[in-house]
Image (cartoon, rainbow, N blue to C red; front, top):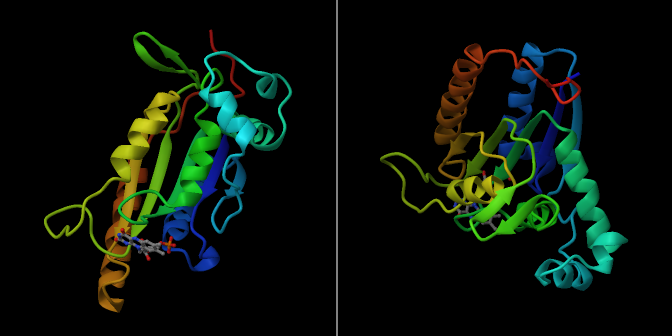
Length: 218
Ligand SMILES: Cc1cc2nc3c(=O)[nH]c(=O)nc-3n(C[C@H](O)[C@H](O)[C@H](O)COP(=O)(O)O)c2cc1C
C-alpha cells in the first residue's frame, strides 16, 4: 500500500496557498493510486520546536553519544520525524517562501531529519545519504515572483531544498509554484490557473509507481 507524507509548512492553515497546491498534488496522486494512506505532518505555526542543547551537542560531536543511544527531547522528536519520512513512498511539501528561502518552520523540520550517523554519513568523499530515494513534490507559494522573466527577487529556497534533501538521499524533487500571491486578485487568479494547469499536465503523464515501501525488492 502506497504511503504519502504531507509536510505542511504554512502558519495560515486552511487559507494557505502552498497547502492548497500540496493538497491538490495529493489528490492527483491518489487518483493514480486510490489505496494510498496519507500522513499529515503540520509543522507551520510553531508546531515543531527548535532543536535543544543536547541534540545540538550530539550532532556537533565526531562520535555517537548517549543522546543518540537513549533519545529524549529533540533527539526523540527527530527519530519520530525520520521514521515518518522513511515509511513514506511519496513526500509532498507545501511551503511558502519567507525572506527568499524556506520558512523557519521548514528549517526546524530539516534540522530534525538531516542527522549525521542516522540519515547521512560524513565521509572523506563528502556526504552520503542513507535514505532510499523516492519522489518528493514541493509546492511553493510566494508573494512576488522568483522565477521566469518577471522575477524580481532571488530564489534561495528551491536550490537549498534540492541540496539539503540530496544530503540524506532524496534527489527526486519536482517543484511546482504559485508566484505573485501579493500582487493583487487578478495576479492570484492567473497564478492559480497556471499552477493548476501545470499540475494536471504533469500528472496526466505520471506513470503509476511500480514499487512501494511494502514491496519486496529482489
Ligand atoms: C515573514 C514573511 C516573509 C516573506 N518573504 C517573502 C519573500 O521573500 N518573497 C516573496 O515572494 N514573498 C514573501 N512572503 C509572502 C509569502 O510568500 C506569500 O504570502 C505566500 O503566498 C504565503 O504562502 P501560504 O499562503 O502558503 O502561507 C513573505 C511572507 C512572510 C509572512
